[in-house]
Length: 291
Image 1 (cartoon, one colour):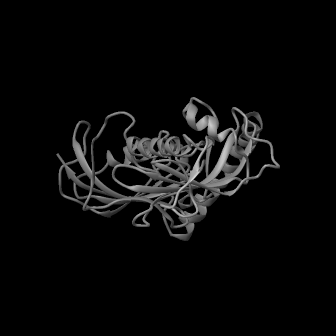
Image 2 (cartoon, rainbow, N blue to C red):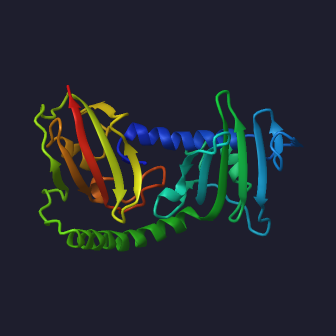
Image 3 (cartoon, rainbow, N blue to C red):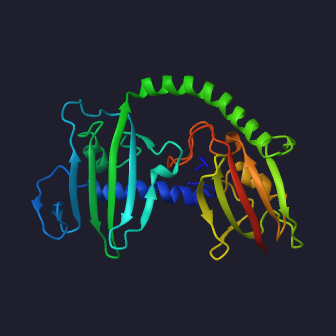
C-alpha cells in the first residue's frame, strides 16, 4: 500500500521490505574489509563468524554508483539448510527491485558497501544467525542518475496509465466480466454469499486471500489455516481497494475483487518491488470471521 506484496496489509509489506534492507545490512556490513578463507562453506570467503561471501562477477570497467542513483537489482534469499526460497524478486512481472542509493533509505553500512559496486556485479552472501543459516544472491542489473530516472518515470507513467486501462479492458472482455465497476473503478464479483455478521468499523475480522496479477501469476496468499486478523477501519492497514471491498462484505462472503492501481499500489508500485507501477490486481478474498 504504499501504501505499502507484497500485497494486502501495510504492516505486512513494511515488514517484508524492512526485512529486505535489514538482511542486506547484515550481509554487506563487512564486505569491503579484510577477509580470510574458510572451509565451512566451500567457495565462500569468511568475513567473520557469521558472514561469508562469494563474488561471481566484479565489473571494474564501469564507474561505481554515486549518491542518489536508482539501483535495479535481482535478489533472492534462501534458507541454506533446507534450500527453501524465502524471497525472490522474480515473483514480480519485472523480476527486479528498484531502490534509491540514499542513507535515508538504507543504513550507512549498506550505503558504504553499495556505493563501491556497479552494474554487472553479482555477489552471494551466507549469514549465520542464531536460528538459521541464510543465503542471499544479488545481481546489480543497472542504475541511473536520479534526475534521469525521474524524467524517464514521468514519460513512462503517461504510457503506463494508458496501457493499464487497455490491459484491464481486455481482461474484462476475455473473462466476460460486466463493466459495472463501482464509482471509484473497483470491480467486486461475488462468489459465495455468507450469512454472518456484516463488516463494520471497529470489528475484528479474519480473512484469507490470494493476490494475482492479471496474467494469472499469484504474488501473495494467506490461507484459511493461517488467516490474517486485523481491526477493520484503522488507517493504513489495507490498500484502498481492499478496504472498500471488505466494507461491503459480511462473514462467510467470498468475492473476486479487481483493483486498479489507483486503489492499490499506484504510480510507484509496492515498496518491495513485486507489484510494478500502474498495475491492476485481482484478489480472491474471503471473510472468515467477524467479531
